Length: 363
Image 1 (cartoon, rainbow, N blue to C red):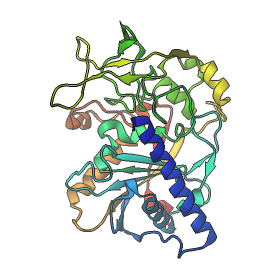
Image 2 (spheres, rainbow, N blue to C red; image 1 turned 180 degrees about the vertical axis):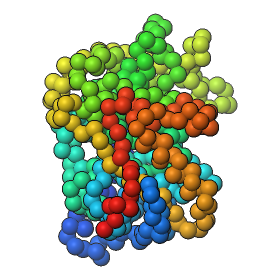
Image 3 (cartoon, rainbow, N blue to C red; image 1 turned 90 degrees about the vertical axis):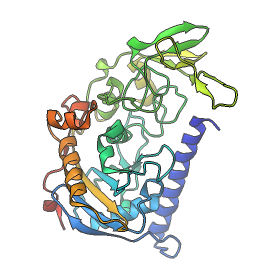
Image 4 (cartoon, rainbow, N blue to C red; image 1 turned 45 degrees about the vertical axis):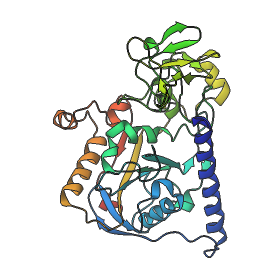
């Protein structure tokens, strides 16, 4: 089974599970589907700590729902986004699934002309009117590490609809979109002949290094006009060129600069006008779209290992820097020793996250 098929199966399974839970909860048949227990045990300025039997919510939609419902027992429905972070003191990055360190559950979408269908299952999650999505992170440091939170937030506008032809669901694949959801920069694309290409150090499904949102991503989110989106080069059937070594795993073939080579036989160029024809105009447009988002963070523990004060302080620092209305502090960048962007930087200062005094929204 190829990567694209696996991704589609995961998405289909998630929607089926959500539909099952939603139907059971609406029918009042608590004996049909019982949600796991969860309870808030600490309240802080920018996040809360919640206890549940397992921190497997990244691969368990029912636990995500249980955590959200517990949150809304204590807080008003005034948040666009909830971010669940596993208390993972030993940093076991594959505790959910191999390679799966973050997920997005799209809860509510009323916008048209994006890569996400209209949906509203908010009541299942405990939200009557506002919650748009729930991000699950395998560790609080993933707020910045691997740009996972920036990546997952963008999935609010690109989940199940095809924006451009691609080989993997809800990601940009082998294209020149070059954003948080994958792809490369057009100026790095090289034709090597015989249907072979290289395009620098990129990944089809994520940003290899922290980058701002690309113009197409910014357009889908409603933050820039369509005129600012350049044409996009697309390898519709792109795949990595691999070779076998005797007694070893298959390896990527690379060019003389060490960049991976991919092959493609179907190449197309997509303009923003073609994308709008396909999806319909973005509604609301960039002038009227939402640009301020209120977010709440939840640190989830199973209480088997006590949370240290240093972990609470680090979590607060990650949240503070990510939601800052301005660049990430220089001293914080020096501490992380890698290129990072917070939400304000990734959106060119056009959109912001509000975290504020969480206690002011207590019921």
